[in-house]
Amino acid sequence: MPVEWKRYIVSDPEILRGKPRLKGTRVPVGLVLGYLAAGRTTEEIVAEFADLTREHIAACLDYARELAEFEAVV
Image (tube, rainbow, N blue to C red; front, side, top):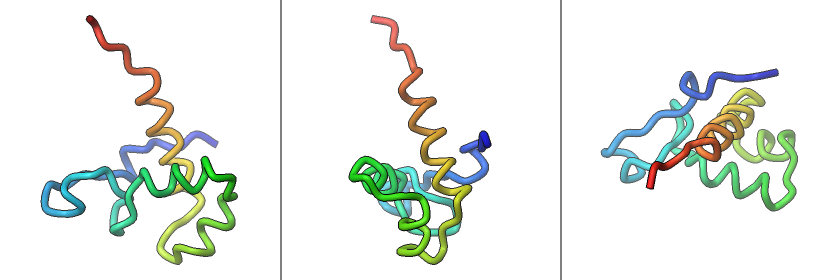
């Protein structure tokens, strides 16, 4: 199920020094991606962070996908 990451991920220079985070939380996207890279499942992450949902995790993956598709003109 595709999730539009812009509905779930925000950045505010006053919170976490502007690092992308999940809306309504102080959980940085990088932390969630790190958990996934370490082999944690969506269910394990949601169980550890009560404020998160499956949609939050999917939004982090969609955000990472979009960043990976970015093409820099050199």
